[in-house]
Amino acid sequence: MPSRLLYVMDPMCSWCWGFAPVAQALIEQAEAAGVKTHLVLGGLRTGAGAALDSTKRAYILEHWQAVKEATGQPFNLDNPLPEGFVYDTEPACRAVVTVRELHEESAWPMVQRIQQAFYAQGRDTTRADVLVELGEAAGVPRIEFAAIFDTQPIHAATAQDFAWVQDLGIAGFPTMLAERDGQLALLTNGYQPLEPLAALLGRWLERGKDA
Image 1 (cartoon, rainbow, N blue to C red):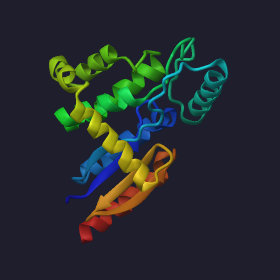
Image 2 (cartoon, rainbow, N blue to C red; image 1 turned 180 degrees about the horizontal axis):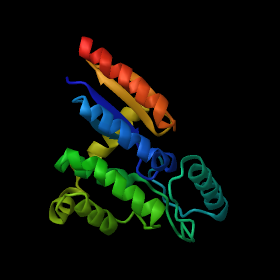
Image 3 (cartoon, rainbow, N blue to C red; image 1 turned 90 degrees about the horizontal axis):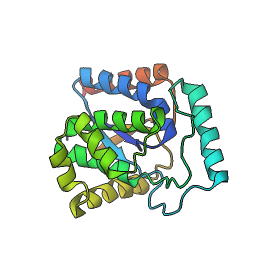
Image 4 (cartoon, rainbow, N blue to C red; image 1 turned 180 degrees about the vertical axis):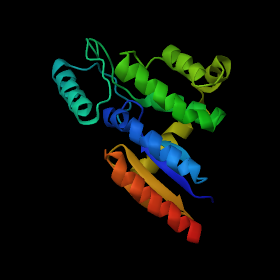
């Protein structure tokens, strides 16, 4: 198996949105060395059937404010998470899996579009019609995306990602791992700025040249 980065994340995780510019830089650094990135979907909040109550909504918005202040990423805080919103990240995760299955190189652009839509534009990225539109913007024809998004194989592939993350004991996102010869090296579990992570990844990439 070739070396690769594994980015374990959820497109509707606020710290993953905060980490997006760092992730982009690390993905580009690895790509320049011939190492591709594989996205693994974590399933931050799945199966949520109830709308957010006022207490939970206030807690989440405080969290978003903290991420905004720590990372500088834009958040739409003008009436976000409207009344009745069900914060279920499974559809967004499944949308990324759908794109990954159809055209893996478009998976990261899909994540970026979901994050931008949800956090910066205040759009409801739990809705299938929104996800189909974002998939098309990421480079996957609408008809191809819609044909498999709600099929059993895609539901199963998404659940398989969630199970892999749980089996590995990853409790927080973003998490980035480097894999070589079946061995995993942890680059980060949680948000960190670029500089230390770029240095860490650089050392890992250098060791790969000597292997």
